[in-house]
Length: 437
Image 1: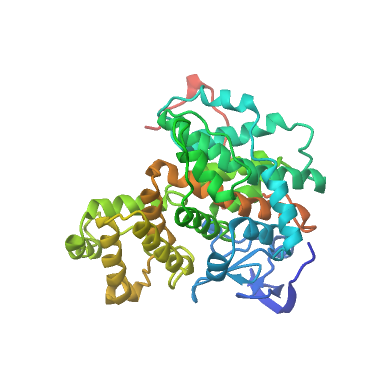
Image 2: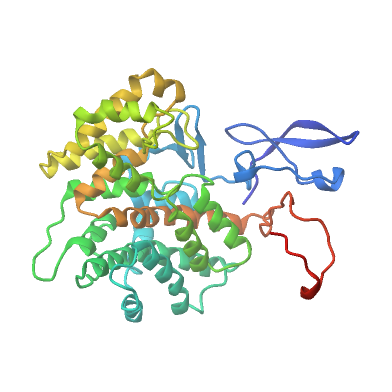
């Protein structure tokens, strides 16, 4: 990866009476950064940044977020344009290779992905080892890692061809694994992929078709699923993506790195947000109770919190939320669902965009606010929501992992710490110790 950073001056820092000069670097977009790589060598000190919220851990050319303006760009393309005009595999190609494919490039890429959709038959035996009530994310994390056992001859991450093959396999097999997870959890037989169908269409068929009946794909639901995949494909250096990069920095093979990303995504503060938002809407129950719950949310002594509002990064309207709102309306209209949950969601959104309390705090609806409504309408249980998130985010993880491996400046991740424990002390034999309780 050729660096796109350019020098933008020097920053001077006074440390213990010593002046340290650190280069300021400019990217294509976003704020400048101070390069602190030589800080310890020059001054003998580190920086402290819990959560790394003010630290750039890498240089990347894949995704850019402007939280203040509410912009999300993939390789320079606005997310709303991609969601409206493109398809998931086309976006996957863009994230991986840096440009939108020509027709011949897309046809070749689509063929390479499609030929890897099937799983080794022995992988199915893994599922019988899980309890039927196992959490879907537990099954997904385990089976993703297990894929490595079936491709031991193609896991050299420093071999570009082997790495690309692993990437194609992962993109193709994640929907099949996710559908297996769902089918196993509800006690239905597995459905093999149909390579004549599109990526999203094939996934929905593997989830919802049964051998006893003919399955008829619904284009509205297929498009909704494709949009959900696009809108969740990548989101810069979030917790799971950083986890994938950190795991990969040790030389771990792609299956291990992606499994680590799945585990990180499982956290309720990350991938479980759309499930939490839907559960909140269900708790409110009807639009006429929205005012009551808004007052509860404003009360600092009340434990109730509005889920699906605000974002760690966005301080403006989440650019993905508008597309999700339109998609929710399309899906509910298609299925002729008069869901009071959507009425609750619309009433809450109206208040959030007009109420001074929300506007001042920039608590705008985010993508999770509507995605849960859509997935619920399609027929997925809430426990599957994060699994679907993982299917979509796999392409982002793989693109980021691939970029980090090709980055000549990349090193094994090794964050520092500020130690505040006991000072050095001498060992005392157990018979001579005095109780410290």
